[in-house]
Image: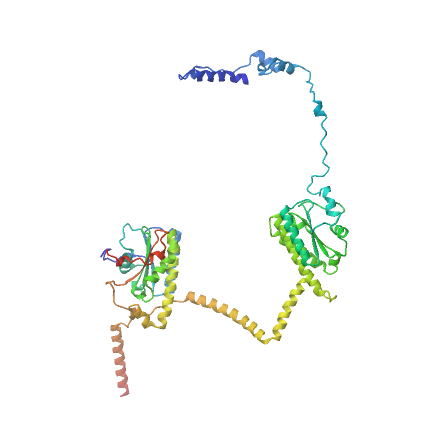
Length: 191
Length: 351
């Protein structure tokens, strides 16, 4: 692995580059909290770094979302349901990476458009505003996806390479077993 | 004092001319000092410091007890004395030479500005506007211009002036306007106008014209606003007077005109059920739509979006995420996102 195979502990808002002022960090966290309130199974993380030599921001984002252990994200929101905004202030690049669960609703094109909306603020170095814009545009896209999947879940999930999750097989067996016993008891009573 | 500097200057001169050796240090500079005899003579007034520099004639004149006789050239004596300017320079008084043009005779144009307070161009524009007003209405509008602080001569009231200059029969309005002080403006209505327009309405006309003038800061713009507003109000006043001319008992009021229009609207509604239903429908639908929009907005804000649980096969052996999204570079203003759209993603490029 280019970046390592160990898990990386981090928080959903990480500014290792230190580009956000103290008074800007709390509003940035509030943006992420607000996102989680509207999407109870998803989370939105931001990583701002100043990398000396980053071969590919896409690869790093891909690796970080797969290896990242977000300590302040509850267990109901696995990394499959996460979206990571990565900003490299040295290379002046920003990228978005998202988990498997969001494949039906987001795409490279739509996330590029989301980042494009924040481009003016990134140019000005107004990273807080850029985060706000990205969150807002992502919410818009996700709400649209939510409406579509509500109408036709199978089709939309299939288009994103997903399928509706079946109940846990072990749990299913236990429940089925219980049901069988109950039925037999009922039969006995009838006899 | 001059004597005190002479050795110093001489010393400097010697220093400069004495070459590069820097002999200035060797020159001893001494300040001039009074001798005891000189000091005593100075205290008694017999000695003037620096008098050694004066010539003998000057010294003789200085110590002579006789005043010098000054002889004035006869040619200068014969010069005529300056004429005394009679007109007062007080800003409150209208110069006497203009009184006749203001108060003795009827002005030649609707704009009376004998003091030339307006420039030629401004005068032309204003006069043109008043001519235009006169063409459109029966009530002529005369505008007298005064300077900001000027006052009418003692014993001259604006009404008396208008009655004397224009007579009482003619339907006209004369405005006395003080450039830069719109609040001081006075509007005199001729008896013919007063007979048809109540005092309250006449006062309202003036009040609105002053308000319009005060919206501007520049004095000529104030005048333009004043005259434009006054002209408009006079025009509508005339229309209303014409309407009520056939009904001597009608109560004149400009606002009555608008009230009547409103009443007509409601009477018309009662008579036309289709119109009534349209108005009622609108009255219900519009607030209803607004309320619905507000409710929907707050509902959307507080809504939680839960996606269905899904599963799929792993890509690139990634346990959690394979959604490689867009990347935007913000290194240069000259490369907007639209130019980055067709760039091949780096993970598809050869390393």
